[in-house]
Amino acid sequence: MDRTDDDRHLPAGANALCGPPAPLRRGRARLMGDALLYAAPGLDSRSTRHAASILASLDGRPVTVRTPQGEVRGDIVVVRPLVEKHVLAPGIPVVLIDLEPNHPAYRCFLGAGGPAGACALAPQRYPGLLRLGRVFGLGHLHGPALDALAQAAVERVAAEFPPPPPIDIRLRQMMTLMDEQPRSTLVQLARQVG
Image (cartoon, rainbow, N blue to C red; front, side):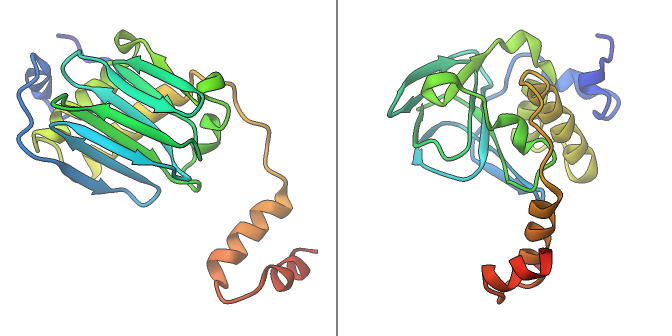
C-alpha cells in the first residue's frame, strides 16, 4: 500500500497495522493539551460539553448519536460544541477526539452538524482518522508521532466545514488574559483590553 498524506506520520511498516481491525480489549486515552484522544471497545455516554467531538467506528458498524433535535448514525459522526448528546456504540470499537476551545481547528466545528447538532461523514474520505483509531487503540503508536497523526486527522475533518470568520483581536486578548490572570474579574480584564 502506498503512503498518502493521511499516513505520512505513521512509522514505516505501520500500514500493516491498518488491515482488518483487531478487537480493542480496553480503553486508552491521551491528553494532547488542546484535545483528548480516546479509543474504547464500546461506548454509551451522555454529555454536554464545550468540546467539539469527532467519533469514528473502527469496525464499520455505525455509531449513533442522539441529540434533543434528532438522531444521526454513521461510521464517522461530528458533534458541534455544547450539544447535549447520547453516544451509543455498545460493543463497537470507537475512537473519539474531543477538541478544546483553544485547539486551532475548534472554531471550524461551530457550524457543523446541521439541525441535529451532529452530522455523519463518509468514512472512505478519512482513512487517516480510521488508521489513527486502530494504531492508537492497539497501543502501536505513542508520543509525537501519535500527536502528529491525530492533528493531521483533525485537520482533514475540519477541512469539510466552512472556515469561521476571524476572531476579534480584543476577544483573543481577553482569552489570553483569562489564562494568565485567573483570579481577575471580567471587569478588570475588560479594562486591560480597552
